[in-house]
Length: 241
Ligand code: IPE
Ligand code: IPE
Ligand code: MG
Image (cartoon, rainbow, N blue to C red; front, side, top):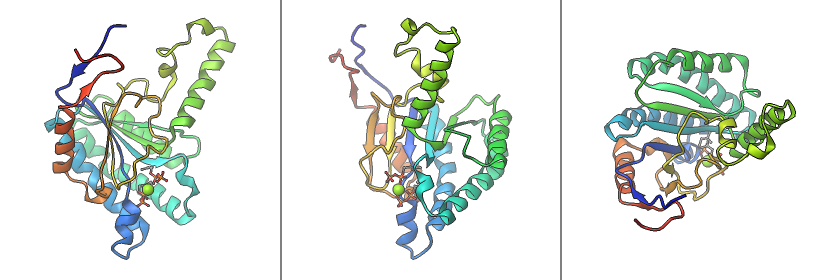
């Protein structure tokens, strides 16, 4: 493989770990769910900002496979927020030509929510604008484990030769198989960790860890991060061209 050093005009795929809703609410003396509602309202502005920033794919982390550890009240509140959010936004996504997809394990989600997720994917299936992917009950390790299981099933059934398994084969089994790898991963709220988000896909992503809490994140800040990405020298293990 040759050197693939290149300067990019801007990121084609931005992924965001939307963190800090709880602290945002706490700072206002309100329950954590108040912060989650405020956080959900932020999403629209950032989705709208994608075309004007040349971002074709936006992937957002809404609920991790580890977030079930939270109180029953918070988890139930989040699940009901996701249902209402999808129901409310679905038609708008169609109007904005936004194609919605979900990644993560559906098995643990309730049937009503899962049906709404299917409906949103179908309804926006023809949209050709921004590709919005919502990670819900998503964990990078869980995704790789589920992918490996399906791959092993194909080997066992004789559909796949183990000799053909390589770094091109495995991602075809990931939830993200139709998406390009993220170019830029943003995490809000000051934490400098990836918390099990897009582990395989972000191997060469650029990272931005910013202090802003997710409900305070704006279009302007998004624009600044996307613009500063343009100046980075991504080498992919090669040398500067
Ligand atoms: C991110 O905000 C949203 C979810 C994980 C569902 P948090 O709820 O993690 O907010 P903090 O980190 O406690 O402030
Ligand atoms: C990551 O945030 C998950 C989402 C933003 C949905 P967390 O708040 O769950 O991550 P940790 O616990 O700080 O690592
Ligand atoms: Mg958090």
